[in-house]
Length: 237
Image (cartoon, rainbow, N blue to C red; front, side):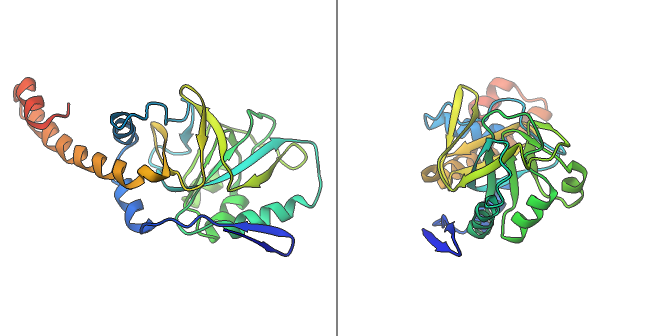
């Protein structure tokens, strides 16, 4: 849905499920298991490339992608604020902001003020295929933020978001990884997994099934049972 409001477009992607319930269920899982479920369904390249991690090891992100496309540019055009206004107004409850950066390393491409504005419009976390700044503020406010590195340099005059809620490409394990608005983003201390929108529930249910089996397998192993018997009974090891 796109609506023009005061010269900036509002583009909202509305999911077809209860985002709060699905988010709570995903947050009980871990990235390796979500990745395994995707592999089982034939999707072998859905993880972002190694090196993207949360600011603290306990942070997790789970929610439909709100995509933002950024470029390196020396422009200081104040009209960029119209883009940011439209971006924040387009956010829906439970979304995870995902920014591409085209490999730019010149500055901090996401910070505390952006997180504050995003959070006020329903965003529950951010995945930046580049850098953040204001890291201590982001940690103190408890806003789950994933990035590749940290950089204190201001973005204005170096980097800007020029579009949003469009397909973007980030660094993946096997080259570029496409992320569409609404694809489900899940990340923990091991990295970030991208679940295609149409598979959001199917992957969740399969991962939950395996999660329960793993708990039983883990307990059996701790009791010293024969690992062959454990694998035969529970199918997860």
